[in-house]
Length: 242
Image (cartoon, rainbow, N blue to C red; front, side, top):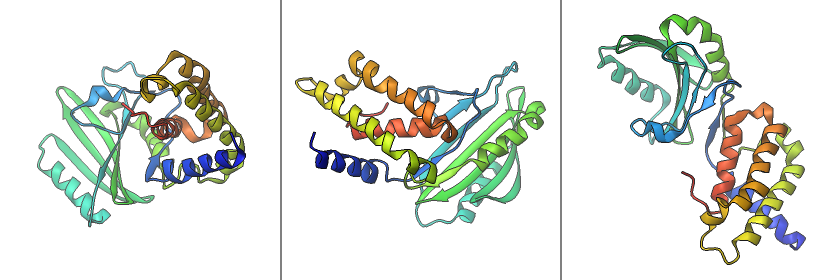
């Protein structure tokens, strides 16, 4: 490929594919990201579940919804009113925390009692609600861990806009260009781009190595950031995400 074409590809990728509203955080290392198909009723953006011998494991989930012409205080009031109208919820307003608002909640689920932190923030006309929960009797064990997760939250319009990532961008550019070239090579004559993306050849030669590259070179960004980057690249290749 001509060098100018390569340059235009990378500029277009960073300015259009990555340029959007994003929120990411660093989940605990040993927590498992869940398949969202299991949560059709609540439709969270992402869910992580911790290991536990308890019948109800600790969880954290992020939900995002578009909002217009509303400020943080008004949105928090709406959330509080929802809990006020539910007899099995008890809540306590913990006030401002970082860029948002923090609420503690206790809830009865069948015979189990849950304790939760719920962090609420508004960014770029979207409401972000991060809920971190555990069995009530274990909440003291997870309290500081939950606060660390909230502290790690980053709101950004560009997933690569940090000094650390700028330093590593040259190598990442090279990797992305290799993937794009491989994808374009395989897609010639194929029935669909989706078919190419999920093909054994592309997954083995390009996609799995990319996952490994992100995990090895960007561990400090956390697995959720890595998942967001993979999703954005997949969308840029014009392959729908499930």
